[in-house]
Length: 310
Image 1 (cartoon, one colour):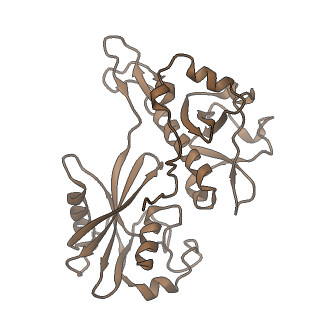
Image 2: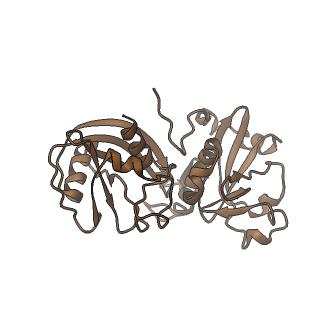
């Protein structure tokens, strides 16, 4: 069975084969069905109540966003409608804009992703990731010349003819692993000093150059907790646009159980059995309860829930 995690949208047709087609982007902009997915300084435009936010995506034919539009990128086509991510960070104050005032607010997707419609959340995440890419690749990393967007906003190219280096959105692969001890029916959760007070999660780390995913998992778990693992099994993956990661989820069985947290990446935690985790209010936010787990928008939470259901 294919697992679809939050911020993933496999039904979206990215139309990669049409990105270099002359006039294609102009045609989408002229189509009244096309919707704009605006991003302002990395934040997404939503409306509705806090507990049930909805994406507000204006029509391409609306004029207000064009004056503020920076880089744009075709996200793809879904159910016959095209979606374009547009950076409107040129707007000084969206709340006072005549077309935006009272419509909604630009908010951090990290805080509301678990509350959103899955399709809308995935579109907002996609637009956010591409806006980040464009904002950070305005100049060539090889020669320093300005770059311009190509392939309907899904790549950039150096403007110096002698260089002409092309760059594409970067994804940083990271493993995220639920380590379990089946002999005692428990799993390893820990706190990073970057986490909100009380929040515990599974372990994670970035893949290094020249390293396989399996080697990364063994190294990261050993470095951060002192635990040796075996029986590594793939679970699923998740795009994580905060700002540009691809999270690759795994289960791993503990070969040793004595914990020695490194004190830097992880500062506290331990082995927690199934009964303890099932007794928690797992949807409580950090600060509301002494012990919290990651929100439902994260693959970390999916790993915990699927282990509990196993």
